[in-house]
Length: 451
Ligand SMILES: *Cc1c(COP(=O)(O)O)cnc(C)c1O
Image (tube, rainbow, N blue to C red; front, side):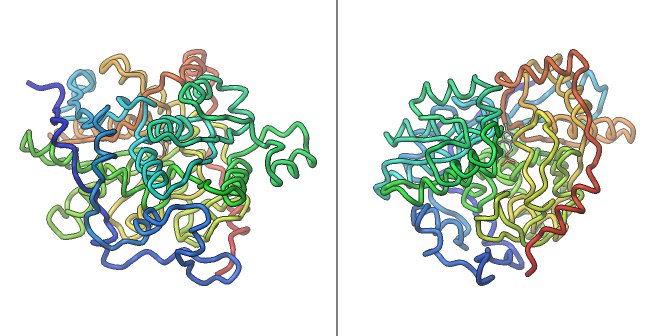
């Protein structure tokens, strides 16, 4: 009886899967916020390399993964698929629970799957320096690791309150050689403006994005990198789902329910899109695919499917997606990676069209699930991933109730070793549950751009 289903290094997929090739109807295109016309490659050339822009709009079903990227993936990929037998036993469920574990990468999450690819294509394009923003530091540490590998300089604008409260991921980024600044900084116009208005501001992800984009647009040989939402990020993350499919083939099984947490949608889209394809082409009509989000930031369950800005300042192209409105500021829950007002346009479209569904939870019930997982399976998962754990447990309990032997698999996006203060707060009963912020959402929805 196997606990881990492992692939050989030589089984690392040689191409990513692009779901745009299989959509019955394409996603509405990103729009220029001024002209409201679809944006073209030229609009993006200032901050992204051409190869990534091509991937963003590609309709090819498979896109080759360059050998140089696969060589780096070998450090931690293929990632293991686990059968959570002790969790099943604790739940007394007839269901089988599996999880695909992305906590094995050097930065500890799925994010380097795309960061390595982005660093590589920038290096190939002759770019010498990459800038980005980071909140809690998961994306920043993945990019710091990846730029180091390809000898690129890396600057990270880190939201000031996280910089001050969460030093460990900053130290991780600095250990890989990145420059990390508490944002807003005096290094950009946006930052100086913000500091003039409020010298004691604790910053926000929106401000940090604006600083990073300005930095990239105003420096030669410098590009910007984004860790989720965009089609090419989702594309890179399909390495997870392609491996997962092979792993289920090895044990001659196919999941009934696939679950994953959704912040911008990259890890879960990556894990489930190769399976969503089976649903689109009619091979697996019964397959249930469920996104999990926090009730404090319920984008898919309570948001609207409309055009909105990708950032909170209003600088990016308009994206058609589920959104709570770009001015919505979610409560400070510990799953920082799930505090995003929008979602991947591809995942949004597939949800809108009924191929995927979504559920939302309070953070205390999520940590309770993560504790049961830690005490049965051993791993302390990231607060984001704990949302997927909670949903998987709920489905397993439902199976017990109905005496159904379903196969449940969840995307386990990362470890929680730098989030232990959140676990401490949970142990000390100091975690607050935030209700669905109905009025705040309604207010921010009224700020959506009119198309
Ligand atoms: C960033 C992050 C997420 C949320 O981002 P997605 O793009 O939705 O995957 C989830 N889990 C972990 C561990 C993260 O670092």
